[in-house]
Length: 205
Image 1: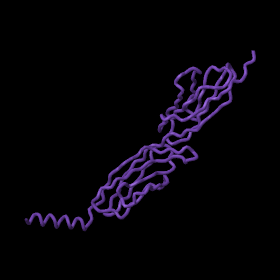
Image 2 (image 1 turned 180 degrees about the vertical axis):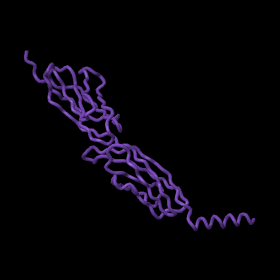
Image 3 (image 1 turned 60 degrees about the vertical axis):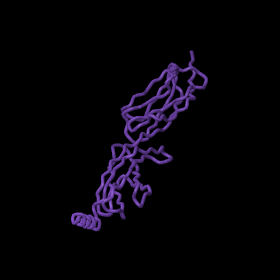
């Protein structure tokens, strides 16, 4: 008996469960003609095996784990009827990059923020200071790990937030969760002098 090539008309789309080390993809119910036994899904990662799903499986999500953060992966799907295999369809999904680490080097009226990259792929970092005079979002390449803020007030605490970004708008851009840090500038000479004078004045009362 001649078995015709099965048709695949399902649609693949990224599931919100995609994370730093996993990719999740939803697939729709087949609407094409023909008979097939199972769906097959693979991803271009050497340590990941093909996932098989029965055609009547109601949970239409497939997930691949133990992946690298920030990388762009291709998920491929096909069906089989006996030994006959349908054409393959695919979609690209990027894992979420890992959050960076932040440290500060304080000065009297300036602050240098040091960004340390996490494991995986990162194309650039985004850094903001919520209570600096310059509150604009700064972006830095991975090889530029220090950003300096100037014209700050001595003996003042500043709030910095950073994210890691992988990819662009045309290559499935993903942004990590936010890393926050609070850093204080050093005591300035003028502020320290005022503090000493105030203490002397108070002790003389």
